Amino acid sequence: MNEYYDTTAKKIVDFLIGFFGVIIFLVLMYGLAILISINYDIDQYLLMFFLLVDAIIPILVGIISFPMKRMYIGIGIFSSYLIPLLIGGACFIALIGLSSTGGFF
Image (cartoon, rainbow, N blue to C red; front, side):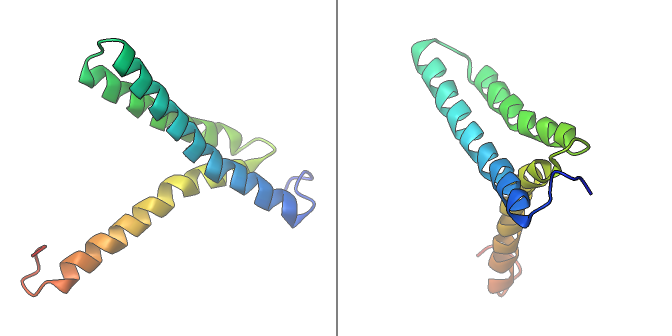
C-alpha cells in the first residue's frame, strides 16, 4: 500500500473526489455541449460523439491514476459508472419480475 494513505480520511476524500468529480465533469461538459449546439448549427451525431468522448475521458483518467499514488480516485471514478448500472439492472429485473407473463406489462 502507498505511504500516502496513512489515514482512512485520505482514502475517503480521494474516493469522493473521484466519484463526484466525474459527475461534476459530465454535467459541465453536457452544459457546454448544449451551449455549443444552441449557438452553432452542429449536427446531432457530432454532438453525440462529443458526449461519448466526454464520458470516456474520466474512465481513462481512472485507468491512469490506478497505478499512481492516489488509486482511490480511480476506484471512485469506476464506482461512479458501476453503481448506476447496478441500480438500473436491479430496477430492470424488478420490472420483469413483477409481471405475470415475464414481460414488462
